[in-house]
Amino acid sequence: MANLNQLTITEASKKLAAGEITSVQLTEACLAEIEKKNPSLNAYLEVFADALEQARLADERRALSLSKGLEISPLLGIPLAIKDNILIEGRTASAASKILENYVATYDATVIKKLKEAGAVFLGRTNMDEFALGGSTENSAYGPTKNPYDDSRVAGGTSGGSAAAVATHMALGALGSDTGGSVRNPASFCGVVGLKPTYGAVSRSGLIAAVSSFDQIGPITKTVEDAELIFNTIRGQDPLDSTSTENPKSEIRNPKKKIGVPRTLLEKGVEPDVLACFESSLEKLKGQGCEVVDIALPSLDYALSAYYIINFAEVSTNLSRFDGVRYGLSLKGESLFDDYASSREAGFGSETRRRIVLGTYVLSAGYYDAYYGKAVAAREQLRREYIKAFESVDFIATPTMPDAALVIGEKSDPLSLYLIDIFTVTANLTGNPAISIPMGTVEKEGKQLPVGLQLTAAHGDEAALFAAGKLLY
Amino acid sequence: MLSREEVLNLASLARLKLGEDEVESLQKDISNILEYVGQVSTVSVKSEQGPTLLKNVMREDLPVGEAGAPAATLGTREDLLKAFPKQEKGYNVVRKIIQKDE
Image (tube, rainbow over all chains, first blue to last red; front, side):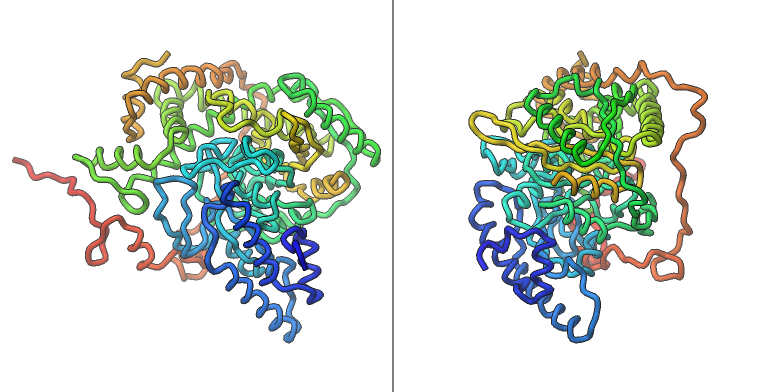
């Protein structure tokens, strides 16, 4: 029974159902791997001391459900890793920030409630960019997560810990959150599957908010099938998140075969070897009977600018709640203003402070119309272009990232790090679902590094992404 | 480039303290970033587009436990009290902000 942690969720689920293995064995295998690899990779910020106890309860529940003939979720007893911005009652949730270092969640996020109902085991909380601001997990207050393929490189971000944990079999699957690519970017850099669901498909109640009009919780897994399994467990409307919508499990009505490629966007700044991987995965899809056409999406030129303006604006607003008065880090100064400012100075990292200042700028009187107002208009225009595009194609395909994983510290200028989000931010602006699927490797300094293919589908059509993803991986 | 005073004013509006080096680097970084994202100013908003695709979602404002209210509680009183930086007799101790007229 060696290497149980290397199983996919689907495989492990079958073995659990057949009585060949137990959740305790699975969890022990993951914990052993964590002990071996986590000290160097820094994927987990905390491993839960009661993980084995959770697994034992899952095994008991299985025996009881079997004896009573109750339905058993495929996630019963499956050990998962959870991003540090998703609340689990009674456990620390710090969003990888010093300001929440001592914060203990008082309730379960809706996705956690659903996973508990299914009987999943929570192994620990994973590293991320502070408050999900970044794209490399270098902005964590607790040090960067290393890339499993080359420890001098980043794991991607912001859900870098979750992606690295799944890639190295320290968990069978994980939850991340995606604000501008935060599930798909580390999935691409670590060679795993990452899904950003349709805006509204998954409740964000209990997710520490970064950019409320972009944030979605999504699975990071070893296979497309596993991503589908987690997504179908956590999806659904929730009265605690008024942006969540009822979107009944979509069925594939007719096979989706037409793929649009925004060629003009690819001409700018994609590494040649990444582009070669992209072309060969398009060829593979053609071989499966897909048709590939060029599409024009003129408003894509504004996507990054619009994305970052809205990001800064909402981040500065959302993070104003951290003031040291009710919870989290609290420092006393000479005045009330000083209390706030000292707590926020000591609690927030430099990228977080930078975005708060930028958000304050773009929202201030005199600049609001030129920045935020225009960004919202560009977003609306882009969304309309996407809706129109999906009348003629079934998918939009791009590389997930323009390059393989960066060297730690490589992009010290903040703007240059923003620019690598070029392909991922669009799905957050338009609310479409998008998935990153491994599409091969490129060589960098003698090491093979994974890169991902991104497929975007029409609103609510995750089923099409899963079907197409399974053709490739 | 943004002036030192402009950066300090923004920080003060956002209730942030900044280190001396940070003010300097923010002057440069913010200007670069604003120059890039300023591209959106050339977006022309077409009038024929009609209303936004967004819509408001409303619900009744009901106390937890009442019919029609969300079923969840977001933590017990004790749990929430525990998170306070300083508490006394079940209250959060905060700084006195109202002064008597002299």
